[in-house]
Image (cartoon, rainbow, N blue to C red; front, side):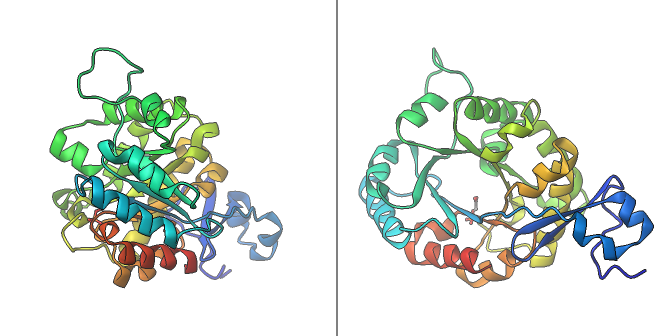
Length: 301
Ligand code: PGA
C-alpha cells in the first residue's frame, strides 16, 4: 500500500516519526506501519507543536556602545513572542547592558559559554548561577568554535550542559561535522556521537529546556550553507537519535535549529523544511535588519 511518503524506512522500526511543515510531529506506531494500513494512521497521530527559535550569536564582536544599540534595535523589532522565540548572545562583559536594553521586549538574554563548577578557584570562568544573576535564561554549549578553536571535548560539553540545566538555564547544544567528516560520509555518526555524549545524564524532563543547533563546521562563517535538503536530512537523523536517547514524543517536541551562514536570502528555504525549527545566526545577527528578516522567515515558516 502506498502511504503517500508518510513512512521513512530508514528510521528505527520501533516507531516512525514524521514532522509537518507547520512544525508538528506525528508519531506512527510500527505495528500500523507493518500492517501498511494508512487509513488507521490518523487516529493514532500525536501532534506536538514546535515554536521556532532563533538565536543571535554575536561571538567576540561589538563593544559596549554598539552592543547596547544593536540590542535596542533587535528589541524594538521583537515585541511579540507569540510566533517565535528570539535570544541574543552578547559577549560576557556586555550581558548586563544588553539585558537592560532588551528589558520589556520579547527578546531573551543568553550567554555564549558557561563553566560547570558552581564557584571557586577557576580563574576566568563564569558559572551558571552568575549568568542567571545577570539575567540570562539561555546558554550555548558545544559551539564549534569552542570545540575546534578552544579544544573542548564531548565530556566537557556534557558537564557544562548538565550544570546549566541544573542551575535552571535553558541550553542550546551545538553539534555538527567538519568538512573532512562530511566528505567521509560521517555526518550522521558525528552528530549522533556529539548528541549522545552531550546529553548523557540529561533527563527527558529537562528536554523542554534544550534546543539542538545543527551547525556544520564547514558552513560557519564561510558563506557556504547546507542545502535545505541536506539540512533536512541531518535534522531528521538528529531527531531520530533524540528519540533513541529520550523517547519519540520527547524528540518530536524538541527544537532543532540550523546554523552556518544563515542569511535573509537563504533563511526561508531552510526554515520551511519540516525538521528545521529555527536558526542560530552568527555574522548576520550583527545587523539588526538582517537578523530581523531571519526572525520573520522563522515566523512564516
Ligand atoms: P555564522 O555563524 O552565521 O556566521 O555562520 C553561526 C554560528 O556560529 O552560530
